[in-house]
Image (cartoon, rainbow, N blue to C red; front, top):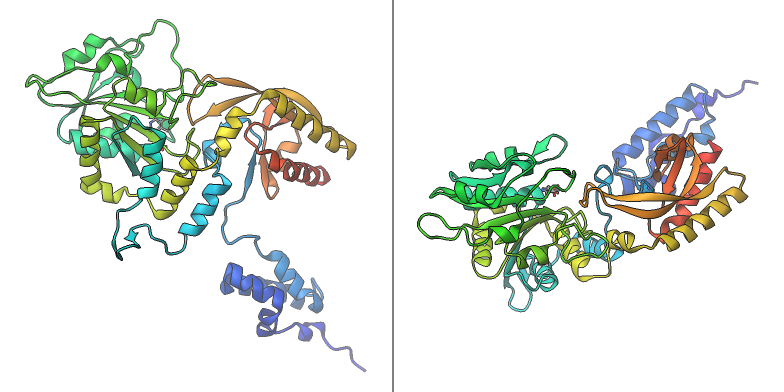
Length: 443
Ligand SMILES: *Cc1c(COP(=O)(O)O)cnc(C)c1O
């Protein structure tokens, strides 16, 4: 009697692909990816590494959980708007809106008449309602696109007067001055790094001035012997022919109205009220929405200039997609965004959550304790602002294992401990956070 060679009992590829679990995986992940996993598992069986009966399970285990290579990250860093993990997380309402818009939808169709409709009116109406002082608003791909579009439409071949203290690098090596010059506008820097006066602007105005630009230093603070000129001090500047010089203020964060916890952070409503002709901002910082760039115009000249920006050829190249429009509308008109909720969370509420979490984890034998913490706003704006927060403190060695998990958890290292700050996390995420810590403890 001979024992059959187990290698001959390795199931065939078409049989494996027909197994319900693998067939379902193929519908979710694509047939090629599943076939690859199947082939790999068959090879392991042929080499005797696994039993022929285990091939299907081995193939399933080798499959990624999702078709995207991106992994979910729980933001326990204490940085409310963290650029490296995708800035603002969307609200449930915005996710729902994105899901709806991801099919075919009436983004540019008037269903009443069947004719072509205006694109993105829902998002624009929501923004106008949120900033009643605005005469008009345009949406582009991101804050940098908004600024580039304004420079192209209003200052191509002309000069933009800007303070030397506001020639900002925004991140990843990108600089506002280089961005602006790439549009064909010329920069006319005025003042000194630490001090610029109203007269510096006035003296630089000439027949070639396109506009005066203010850039909010959203990622650094200059202290000491400093002077900068507020947007309110720049009204009424005119070119030699008497025409008004527009004042464009790039505020960065996208705060639509003042927030009591961020008294130094500029917002669209106040900046327009102070006299800015145009205000540019990002959608995915303190506004708490999707990546987008907003161009608000004040009444009168501002609204006219928004029209000019909207009709510029580059506006088509920097146009946002329907997913962004849907998420933006829901973020502005819908329930408070996660960023807003994180900003508004009280230190008491955060401490309660930290104590509960630490107690359940300690009950599992993990060296966890609740501790006070300080959170920051992050690349989104409000540099230097610190908010009292609370965290679960773990041994430092947890940090790497937490980052390797799925979902990954991004904590913060401080004084030789790994802190999981709760400010940027929704209370609904606490259970998932605890489960991730338990998994890391088993590593
Ligand atoms: C963030 C920021 C930008 C760039 O906006 P993106 O949306 O990242 O393109 C430009 N200006 C200021 C002041 C900013 O803070």
